[in-house]
Amino acid sequence: MTIRDKILLDIAEIRNPRVLYQILEFIHLLKPSISESSGNINKVLALAGVLSDEDAAEIKTSVEDAFSHIEGEW
Image (cartoon, rainbow, N blue to C red):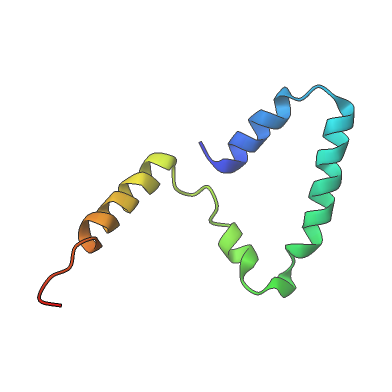
């Protein structure tokens, strides 16, 4: 499940219109900060949710296994 899916599920559970309106206002406050003038942020955000939590954990474990020890003399 992607972060977007999790957010949508949480929002779907909210029944209070006032809270939903506050969320809408917050989203509108964030939108200008995510513009093309922000460099490559849109390209990076386009990748959000591409990996599942399980795939991300597997990659993290692989990286930690490969780079968490020091070889040779220090």
